[in-house]
Image (tube, rainbow over all chains, first blue to last red; front, side):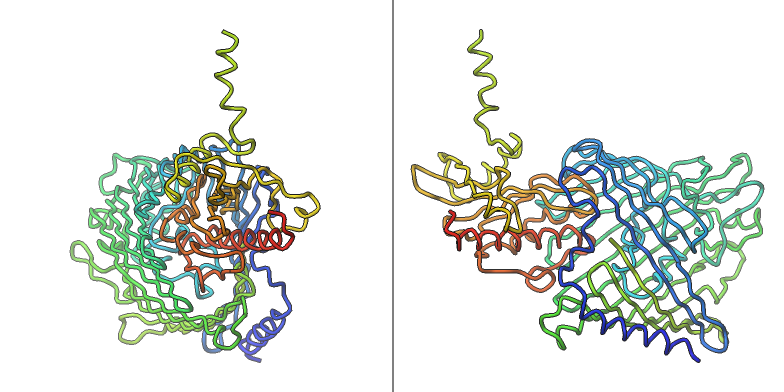
Length: 381
Length: 174
C-alpha cells in the first residue's frame, strides 16, 4: 500500500481529534515552570518526518531532530541559554550555548556558541514557525542551516524606530583540515561548519543583521557576513577562501495571508587556487531566492476556531555554482529549482502536522531527480 | 547627621512597595505624557483575597494603582510581568478613569528574542480597548514575525487583565 494514504489518513484523523483539544492555545508555549521567580526555563522543539521519493523507492521515517532548550537566569541581567540537539536520534550536537548580559533592551552583550543571523530560517528554525516538512533548500545548501559558531557580539532593539540590530565576531568555516579540503560545489560552505567542536581558528569573521518592523505585519531583514575561512595550516597557499554573504528577507502577515521571501548572494574569492589545491569544485558565487505564499483557510470554514489550516506553496531557485573562477565549468545539476505545495495544520501554535509534495528540478537537460512526498509533525514548547 | 541619613532613605520607603524605582520613574513619565499632569499621586488599589483568587491575573502584588490628581480620579495603571521566550518582561497598562486602555508600554525586556513587541506601533493596537473587549492574536492584533511568543504572550496577558477587571467591576470592588 502506498504510504501516502496511510499518512494522509493519520493527518485527517489528527485534524478530527484536534477538535477535542483544549482551547488555551498558549498553554503549549508556556514553559514548564511558569513562575516569575523561576530562574530555569525548559523548552524545546522536535521534527518527526516521513519522506517518500516518487517511484518504487521505499519511504523513510525519521526523528529528524529533537532539541532541548535550557535557559538559566543568574541575575536580572545575566542569563545563559543552551539548545542540545539529537539529530536522527543518534547524533548529539550543541546548537546554541551562550551567555547574555542585558544592559537594557537597546544593548546586550553575548558570547558563546550562537546562531549566525542570515535569512529567516537559520535564526527561526523551530518547525511550527515554517511551512513544509523540510526546511527550504536554499537554507540548506547556501545558508547552511543550522549555522552556528563561537563568537562574541552585541544586539538590541530600538523600539522608537522599530529596529533590531545584531553584530558579532564569529569564528568561520573551516576550508582545510588534516591535509584535506572541506568545501565543495554541491553544497558550498556546508561541510565547513565547525559547530563549535574543537574548531580551527585562523581569522575572525564579521556578521551583522538589521531588522525593521515599523510597519504592522511587515518585517524586513538585511544581513551581511564577511571574512575568510579557516585553515589548520596557514602556510599552505590557497587553503582558505574569502566569504561575503549578503541576505535580504521579508515577511508579511495580513489576517489569513502570509508572505515570505528571501534572497541570498554569496561571493567567494580565491576559489581557483582552492579548487586546484583540494581538487574541489567550489563555485565563486552562490546565489538564490525563494518566495512563499500561505493562506489559513480555517476561518472560512470555522469562524471561531483558534486552530490553523494553512495551504502554502514555495518556489525556490538557487545555484551553488552561479559563477566559477578560472576555466572550470558550472555543473548544471547545481542550478536548482524546487516547488513545494502543502498543508499545515496547527492544533495549537506549538504543534503542527504537515504534508507536502515537492517537485525538484535543475538545469540539466535530462535529470533523474525524483519528486518527493513528505509528512511530518513539528513541535515546539 | 542622623536625620540626614533618614532623609536619604526616605524615598525608598515612600516609593511603591513592589515596583523598582527605575520602573516607577518610567511609569510616571508615561502618566505625565498621557494625562498631561505633573502633580498626581498613586494610590494602591487593594483587592480582597477571596476575589483575587478568582482572577486570571493577580492583583495582590501591589501592582494596581489609581492615578489621582487633586482628589480627582484620572486613571489607573497595572504593572506586571509576562513571559518572553526564555525570560519575563515588565509592562505597564495605563487606563483612563473609565478603564479604557490609553497606553501599554514595555518597561523592561531582558532577552534578545522577541524585543520587537516594544514597538510603539504594535502596542498601539491595544489602545482604546474597554474591559468588555477581548482580542484575538493575528486577527485583531497583527502578529510580529520572529517575535510570536512574546507577541502572543502580551495579547493573552491583556485579555486576562481585561477579564480580571470585568470581574472586579462586577463585584464592585473598585
